[in-house]
Length: 338
Image 1 (tube, rainbow, N blue to C red):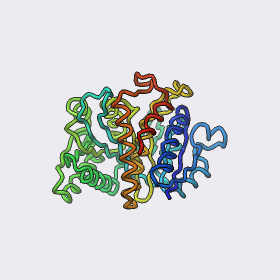
Image 2 (cartoon, one colour):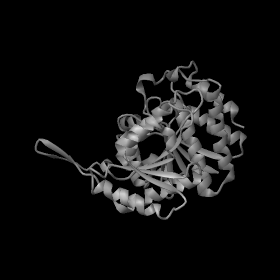
Image 3 (cartoon, helix red, strand yellow):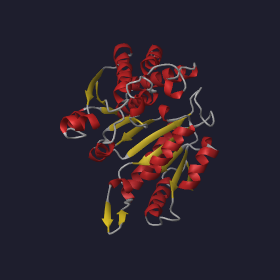
Image 4 (tube, rainbow, N blue to C red):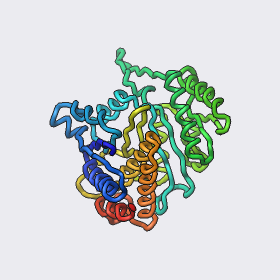
């Protein structure tokens, strides 16, 4: 049995959490994989209720679980996800971008993964006022760069697609910080002679994600660049509604949709739950690798096949030009999970 913590979030969070909860319950009932799911609060609602965006009780329950699913939260997002990444040392942010049928992707043969360093860079929040100026300190360490590079090469080997890693940086301008990141990736590439390695400046990568997105396999980059490029990649394959993400450490992982809480459509049953459902798929893939559990692999494949089949047949929610509600879309996915 796996213990899964589920942060229901803010805005559209509770609606897409219900959709994922129904998917998990179907897996529990029909696919022979026993799950114990604990719903938790974190974010703006939790802040109003308890004075903390990430209540102590929520954090303790997450720590005792095998994995965490997190719906989007509102203005307090940094006090939830950034804190969880640091406390749990979730150093690898993994964001796939894949073409799905009947979605407005630039091309139909896109299948890439962005591996983003998740613990340092400008996101450490070291900012200061000095007179009329504001200063931000950027930290890039060799240890963090090495381990994210190793994760990228492991990902390329497991995907067994193009078997290529693209290191993205801006070392021609930020010679110390990005220079260190570039050199670290180059050094780690020598441990993986069977995987192609290339380097690319971030502006060129942003252009090539639009010009020839099919040429990428695994992109490894720093925290800020990874945040920006992964949203661009999501739009290249049709929008954030299909974009799942993982935050992975050595012993724990958290999975979440890339998009925000979308307060403008909250309560309207208009949100596409695919990104959160596909995040659950990534969770089962991680559980499968961590525990050498073939049943989790089967469950992950069943979820992706179900989502693929639903969008292939033209089923869409209102936010992407369809007429199905969040609940109706989820029901269509559930009906295909066998």
